[in-house]
Image (tube, rainbow over all chains, first blue to last red; front, side):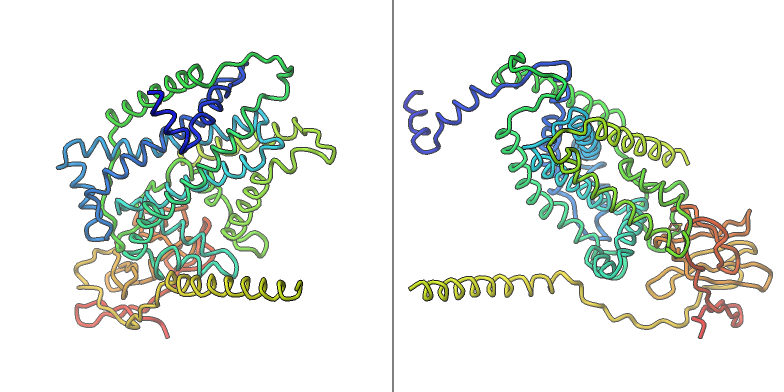
Amino acid sequence: MAAITEWLDERLGWNAIREFAAHKSVPVHSATMWYYFGGITLFLFTIQVLTGVLLLLYYRPSPTEAYESVQFIVTRVEFGWLVRSIHSWSANLMILSAFIHMFSVVFLHSYRRPRELTWLSGIALLGLALGFGFSGYLLPWNKLSYFATKVGTDMAGSVPLIGHQIARFLRGGDDVGGGTLTRFFGFHVAVLPGITTLLLVLHLVLVQKAGMSSPPWIKGENLPQIRFFPNFFLRELMAWYAALGVLGSLAALFPWELGEKADPFAPAPAGIRPEWYFLAPFYTLKLIPSHVWRIEGELLGLFGFGLLAVWWVLLPFWSADRRGTLRQRLVTGAGVALLAYLATFSVLGYLR
Amino acid sequence: MAQRRTIVRWLLGGGFSASIVSFLYPAIKFMNPPAIPEAAVNEVSAGKVQDLKVNAGKIVKFGSRPALLIRTGESEFRAFSAICTHLNCTVQYQDARREIWCACHNGLYDLNGKVVSGPPPAPLEEYAVRVRGDEVVLSKRA
Ligand code: FES
């Protein structure tokens, strides 16, 4: 054993890594539970990779075969229904837990200097997760996903000047069709996973570098700490098991539906709505009238969402004044306001 | 000496940038989907008169795009592009309200294609309808 570790140390610097892991610690306080959600998101991402690879064995990305191949997976392949259901449920839970992680970072003010890059990489990862959601939604080629993609890419098309180019790039042509499906498939299984892996590594390295942040109201050098290995890690493992339990029950008890096959010559079905994490912007779009003063409503909506996103991404930079004093109340207020907007509009979007 | 170094640096930097650009340019062009020439469709047959009941609508193919044909009376038809002017969904005819409805964001149009309510910013494009024998024919308006 000693010989092996020595061999590894010579080649990998193994002892330094062990040394680091042995000293890594996590502060214990009333808000420690929120530390688990980043790890849960990571765990669910791993599940996505594994189930995604399994689905790849049977899935075929073409308009004539996509729906049928998913149907084949859920009806003929052993445990196919389970694997697909887990992939869909885990995607949703992953986005949920990423949102929880993000809001906990906001309310515990962990984005502060020197963690701005951690925040930025995290936001980028959230954006990628939404991209995974949007592109993966189309892959079964059913009615709902077909129209969701039409609406989504058309929104991108209303960006001034370059909108048309973006929409064509996304659709692989002028309309949503076979070209869109192959493209979205490529994004979903190659482009996005590649970028995500790089960013994920960066995000994790940054987290290691800065160590765990404790909220500003919990002061003192002598904050009780627990060791990361094995104490915190084992607790995190319990959290993963809990997440797995929730995921497994949801996937088994409520198998994800496949819906009806997409038909470009059928009207959009009544009650159409996007996945829950796009409901808030969806409902906002429904409310904005066709023209506000002289500006087209959809353009105004897009502009509004854009501003909101930029403002949110830049949070670590406006959250402190020139002297570096944290504008704690302002950030908390902003977080509550955003959360309230997302929650109410999502519920309204779901109900109407 | 220093000058020579600057020149070498510029040459190296320039060569490197040029090679990056020469990789990127074809790649970006490749991503841009080629325009597929579409046979310009100006007229389509939308089936037999008796296939569509009075006060009913159906989606027909107008080239590669959907069109909505509505039979408003015994021998009266109306047709529109079925593509919602808001965000591209396909609209449908609602016989109870005698209106055209888009399910995506609740856009409503009247039987002239005009927006009644909801977010669509412009009316639906209207097509001309003729009845030739017992066949309904849609065509683009000049
Ligand atoms: S796409 Fe028709 S109302 Fe939005």
